Length: 437
Ligand code: ADP
Image 1 (tube, rainbow, N blue to C red):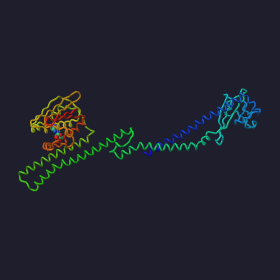
Image 2 (image 1 turned 60 degrees about the vertical axis):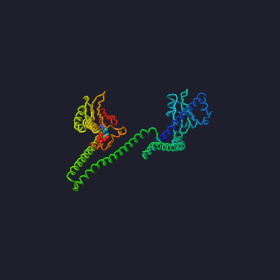
Image 3 (image 1 turned 30 degrees about the vertical axis):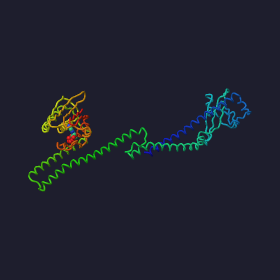
Image 4 (image 1 turned 180 degrees about the vertical axis):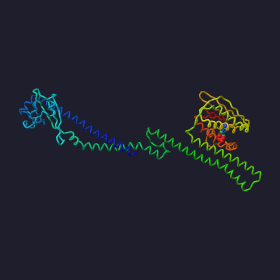
């Protein structure tokens, strides 16, 4: 690209130089031509007004001094006098452009260039009161001759300009490309790159993408490590208990106990694998969530009813209230959200605790509130509970069948359903989560 930009700039530079030179020569020659004709006109006028024409014809005035050729032509084209040649030997001049013009409109001009193209003769003719034509002529360099004369000078100027162009284009390209090259070589240290203002948005975007990629890579790395660790624990128990049974190192009572442990750990494993699969599904269907209109009140009511048995087991009262509100979202996903939030409110509650679930509409917002008076979450943990596998109290989560993935799934689903979540919690007082559609 560098080479391309350089070549392009040099091409534009060279073209500009050539066009400027041609234009200058043409303009200069135009001025020169006008000047010569003006001189010839003045000369002819002086000759006519001072009655020198008669002196010339009588050979008492020599125009050779001024290097001006004077010709007198009668109205029929016959040459009466010529200061450079014998008029008797000269052919009829009636058809000469300048003479014909003078005979018809009073004055005429023409330029004739010699066969060698070096010299041009400028002619000016004007009609005299007696009907004859006075023609004055002067030799001067032709445009080609002028051009060939100035070509060496022009070439050296052009070469000098071209060298300056090369230098400037090299500097320009370098200053355009250098920050991009530096950025490509060291994305992490983009602050130290000296750049120009138009490149700043580009650098910021690239840098943000770079940071996102690094962050995602780190998250994936952490996720893989977490998954391996989380899967390893129940699998180790299952493997250990089954090995004991296999080796016949157990009595009848132990077999039942070990089988219970194996069952509990494999259920836990299954729940976790289901959650992991759900999360990766959510990652994949990012763009193709199907929305429909449904009553959030009904969906929440069904979830609450499903969880009543769980609540009873945990000695927690479930309260449901609110109004019918229609929202547009993915029904299956929203069911998952309500279920997860209510399930957490039951599991992280205290004996005889209460969970309030309500649906309300405030202006254009439909709000789902899940409030408990359970154990609460400390300020520093409130920011982290949405991370995958993050649990405030690991043993409590495990004992209640938690995987640490529930809120990560909730967060993911809400962002895909254009909803947001607010959390208020205090240790020992309880937690309130509001989902705003
Ligand atoms: P888990 O499967 O462990 O419940 P979640 O992602 O659902 O995972 O929740 C993450 C953590 O947030 C839980 O382990 C728990 O410590 C905390 N948490 C979630 N909901 C509540 C709540 N209503 N009250 C107190 N702590 C909660």
